[in-house]
Image (cartoon, rainbow, N blue to C red):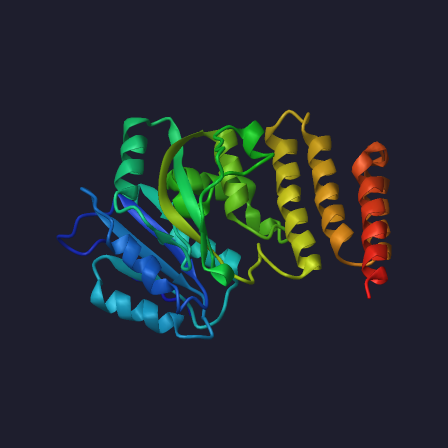
Length: 323
């Protein structure tokens, strides 16, 4: 049975202007830092934190409950007796948010700027036509204990974002009413092949509203050694890449001009072939190339198909010749 705190504000408490939507699963080692970074936010408006915990197998639930007990007027917990999966957890946590604006922060990431929400809400309050505001973010590679700065380019328009999504989920603040419209219009639950919910959401925002980018670095995205988006398994790497490109193609077909379709199909094939040129067998490479060419015959004339195959054959020979 799902356990969601009463939605009415505490008597006498200020209604939250911003809700922080934080989903978490097996994050006991990282969650305190994420929660503390929200509690440390310096704002002149009320902020609530909504924790969506999905029956973790570690002590994540206990961490959540301890923070709720300490800060009952600032933190609420959404959970259930059984695991519902990341997509349903993401949705139900959002639906429990009461703020005019919703900020996203996964349980293994954290905010590094105490003025993050204040800066972004100022932009949204001043500009009613802006649907979402995002910032720069660092990446923290756990396996190497290394912090990496954000990429140099950031985009806010659909044509660029459908080719290169430069938005880190942990940096976003969006209007709640528009997120609700996204769910009603796109219905991501009908696309189980999509391996992420934030990429389609922000593509929709770029097509249906206006996005503003602030160059401040306000968040840190933790890159775990193994996750849905980052895996050492080459079939999983290809599956995630295919999923992202399938999302791009879906949005290009419905919200774009269609002129970028072939470029996206070519990139989907090229990424898979590049991975297979380093890993997997020649048979796997040829099977993937032939599958893509059958679906999109123009790919036969793109040089990367044959070029990466030659590289793979030469690389394989060089490995077998080593003593």
